[in-house]
Image (cartoon, rainbow, N blue to C red; front, side):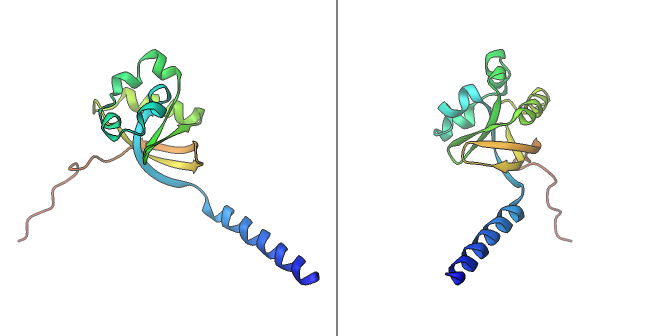
Length: 131
């Protein structure tokens, strides 16, 4: 019985240390308002066509924001909502606004610690030619 007790304690300690080491994660997806997010997320074509103007409409903005990732919508916490408005108001793209989110992810939500516009494919410097 003492051996079983020791094994149980070891398992609990191991699981706890895994959770502590997990920490924040960084993922990239489409920034979207919650009013559209859950409805649009399963459809990749509609997700790609969702506009910044829609997300900034008063009713959509009031619903909060989140990340469309792998066909799911993950709702941001209030800090993420606030930062989303700032990013959207300064966005240089009109649709399919991709962001990089660092935070604690669950199956339905994200506790955001950092949010920034993701680099777009084809942006940045061109590789230099060989000499």
